[in-house]
Amino acid sequence: MKANLLASLFENWPKFDIGEGAFYAVFGFLFVFFGIVLLILIFTGLGKIMSIRNAKTGKKEKKPAVPEKKTSESGEAGVTPELVAVLTAAIAAYYEDENVQCDFVVRRIKKL
Image 1 (tube, rainbow, N blue to C red):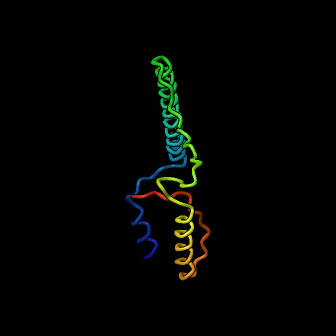
Image 2: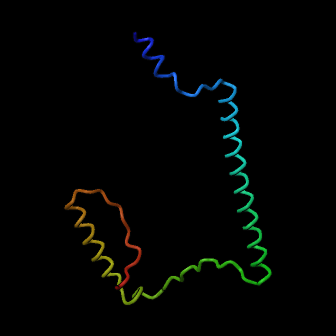
């Protein structure tokens, strides 16, 4: 009885032989592969076209400007080294109460 029950469960399923399944798998792999290659070619071509277009119009790619370091003792916007030391000590004291290992460096203080 169990054999008939199992056979009836799989009776309406589509039947594929190994050859047809392998064909669909290989076809799917090739379709995806050539799709990715096509996308790579399209975006590479667009990049070349845009670089040629920018060269013809005389526009150069903007390079990020390196900020100049201030040599004055007062620092940025009137921030003194004493203020940096006080803020660093306050942050260190806060993290000391939290029992958290924190290695930080105050790089810039900006007034809002």
